[in-house]
Length: 254
Image (cartoon, rainbow, N blue to C red; front, side, top):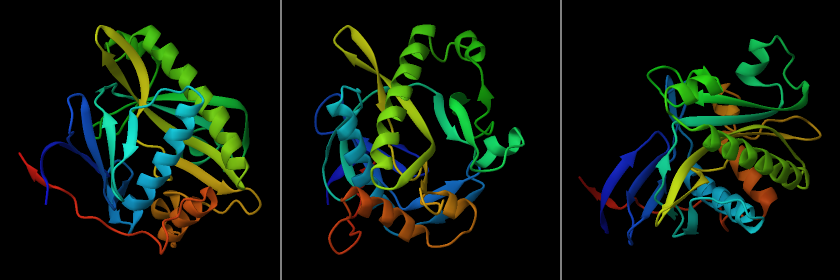
């Protein structure tokens, strides 16, 4: 078994030292969590499916000129990514009222929004990932105004493209979360999409029935969580033959 230096372990993924300078290996776990890690569980096969789904979506985005950290998938649970400096801000793009947003504004879940709304959240489990404004972000130095402009522009492009892609397979993109990183190439820096794009961070509803096919099935104890992730992969045409397989994570050295 390959021994690699573990760089970071989060709730759903592990990052290992990559084979070349400036690269990392991203390993997808089956572990899952909700409500700022207060609810935890395991979704069997989730890591395999999210690896394939994120590979597919990141590749499609690259084809239309959206920069990402993704390089290529290595195996069932791992992909090669570029090492980036993660910006500690999550952007959430909302097309339909759902979850906490619906509660905050007293809207019925499923209400179509007048236009897509972008929100910023500071990445901090300890603080509960608080909602923040551009003033907070620039005042505390988490990102520069130009960084934010680039992030929002990319997020809206992603929203336009993925909304159409999912519509074509009978899914409604209700909302989604994006993370970004600074990719340094020689003296040049550009903002790129990082982390993953999968049912873990996208709300996806069936267009005809509004059935939820994402992590809300875990959050809300709706059951059939594995089947929902499999259905998204099936509609995208990328469900691994025979269903999700497995590969052991590389042994880590500290």
